[in-house]
Image (cartoon, rainbow, N blue to C red):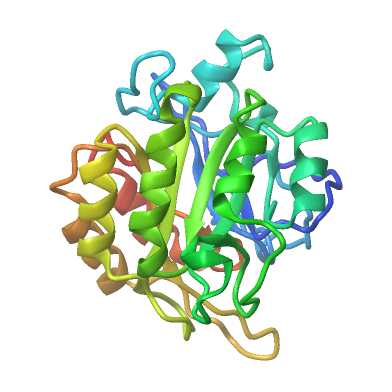
Length: 286
């Protein structure tokens, strides 16, 4: 699988990027965590690696997407239908990541980004009247609640990806999303790291209650299900093992929704066989 990239700055530095390779008949997205980009080109003597603030790539998808205006609509078809891209090519999709604080949300809404990603936690100190807030650990406070975040984002036509860092934030967040669903006729992705991955030491979100809670509210949402990971620049980093990808397949194989897998870019090259195997297990895996 060869990855064609074209870096271009877009503040703030993202934690999620895009990866993929050409394969017909339909196109879609396979997300990758930032750090380094590593290709699956086995003919190269050394991995291609470059620090990026944004990564644009061509990718594909074979799953049947949702109807126009549904949360599971193929994001390429959605933005093509709204004349925001010119072809069904993932290289044209621009992401704005970590749009958590109000200044970042305003910047994202003014930007040319098609998709806005943000992180959701539940304040453990009882602040914000028990509302989910927008922050990425180790942050525990924010000037923005999810309710305020949604109130601004629904004024745009940008796609949404919400990354949940705790199970406690999921149900109250789904209730807030339900209140504005009639205004969200666009792709919505719900993300969580549900399994431990290479060098991962962050706490995972319990897979079954996370999936069950989200599905009970929104059966047509697109899931983004990943692994906790880490990166050590001074040592050899192992990639995603067969045990890791097979455990993910075991969890996802009974789902009806589209599923995308966020992975760390620095670990892709040494995990090509495992990740490609995972994608081939279902036409719902994008």
